Image 1 (cartoon, rainbow, N blue to C red):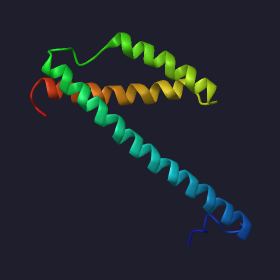
Image 2: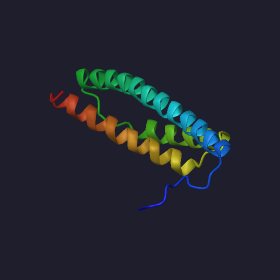
Image 3: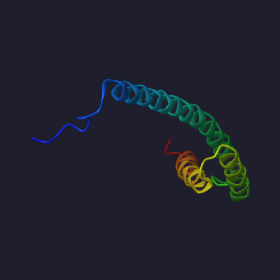
Image 4: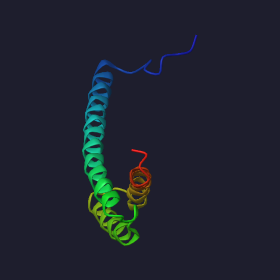
Length: 106
């Protein structure tokens, strides 16, 4: 039988681990809600773009946003490369939604 990953940990360490994990879970929940809110706005942008025959992507804005988010990440002591990867992942999804809206598939 496999050993429990928590074997040998004292009650205090287990309580601290549970508390830290609860904080992580709370932050994850907040991030999901913030992403949902963000996508509500990007969806509205997509509708506006589709109604006005505007391109789904705005490379100049994306470059400005990457620079802004990298600077914010540095200030927050977060890896700027990670922040950029996250942003690119989100923008790819947003552009996909905008393209679907423009083609009338949404």
